[in-house]
Amino acid sequence: MLISIDRYYDSEFYNKCLQALTNNKVPVKQFISSTSYKWFLDVPSLPVMLNFEQIQENEKRYLLSKSIAVFPSDQYKLYRRASDYGTLNPFMIRADYMTSDKQYACFFNIKSFSQGHDLSKIINDKVYYLGKYYNNKYRIALCFDPSVRTVLSSSEILYEKSPSVSWIQTELDLNYKVFMQRDYLMKFTRTPYFLNRRFETPNYYGEFQRRFFTF
Image (tube, rainbow, N blue to C red):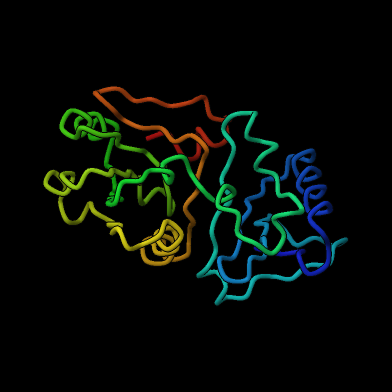
């Protein structure tokens, strides 16, 4: 259930709520609207001791997921601070691969670990693995080398980012056109990738490793 408390409480209280959810082992995802800049919490049930508003159906189209910290040093930096209220801080919604200055990006459905391994023999660039989505319908991979199109079938290619499209619009398009708003792209401060026949991955926190990054 997607709710926002921004109309009623400040950022300091928001952070306290996040800490309480963590302390009570309540699973929660965070999103920000790319139009209103309101933060939304995806929680298992509606709160009974907080003022809140539920998301409007038309606002789901504009949600961006907050980046998830992989390293402990990122945890504090990715907490919402007071200075971020009512704005869109790029650091809060950016994955590591989004810092690339390459002009083209291809998102495709990777069928298996061996396919990623095989592609790394052909493509002279990283093949990022973004994890599983849409009830495991898609296993999303990302490559910045346009030559990847020559070794993929048209059915495997999900979205191609052109130079004129921003990363924000790319994420919105994936959520709306590919995931049909039944899932949202999750971003991490360190993304696994295939390169030179090797699979490089950090030690993710257990829940994310199991849910997103197993084949």
